[in-house]
Length: 312
Image (cartoon, rainbow, N blue to C red):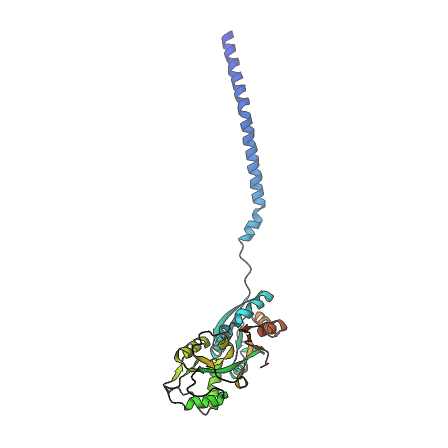
């Protein structure tokens, strides 16, 4: 091998050495990057537990179905009462607002866990039929008669039975009357008043008699638009704003007590109902916190419902 060849080989190896030394920092950096990526992957894998737990389905929400009269909803009571119960127990209450007769039928079919209703005679039949596990008095409000400011029937200041007698004697269409006509507790009370006034049935044949088949709020709206008389619970009346020319016509002492009861559906009839949760709701309603919450519901400074069987 001549000297030139040896010199060329030496330069080539030196170049390769220099080239290798030049690239090694980058390669070291690349190695450090791979190591960092490996650590990040391990950390991510270790942290995957909480991420996966967030994707797990939440615990099933506890709820009950309450079939209740429309007056408790349309008076604003439930908006005041139920959040306090849910906060205390973690149980959500899903309300089906119906007339009492329809609410009782809903429970008979097993489509409700608990009832809040206000027709004592119908409630007693429900219990006698074996559909109710327990029944407790919760609160009372009052029935009142409202009618047009002009009061063409001249019933202002009369007791309820005397007012209904006078309404029945008035010629139509001078006097109009709106009936719930929906088998509600208010409708049942109205039917008893017509009977006490000497009528075997309400005067549906009279042109001025309107059978709306509707809840308390819509019945009040109809009476307001027609200038008609109407039997209403006072709680819904106090919360009602579209009064027009309607006035409350009864003196305070003539108001008719209107008791409400809570009934837990008997699981012997409907085993799928949530008896334990429903009983917690019923017991809370009659407890000191529940009764205080009921007493605290006011509109315009007036108490709408009175705890237990107390009346004012």
